[in-house]
Length: 131
Image (cartoon, rainbow, N blue to C red; front, side, top):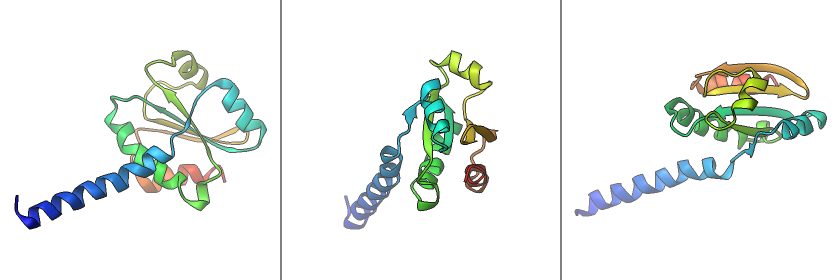
């Protein structure tokens, strides 16, 4: 392998690790009705993230969400994760019909939701509704 090709490979691996690190660092809490109620009672901004491991849209959303939640502006958010495949009663209670659904609460009030959105600006606008 040539020197320049080796360096390009190393740079690509480093970039991939840098991108993946925030995603790993900002894992949410598994959604339960009690976890949502506790965050709402505390007056927290809450993001409920409904996703599935096989969903390409969800995979596109997660780096955007994690990047935003890693900023000072959104660091107070509570992120609750709902698994679309295994948490069917929770989906029904939340009135969710599709994976890649994001729901935002400001305290006890739902202030916005979207499904299938992978645009960073509109996801940020959704989160901003809870500030």
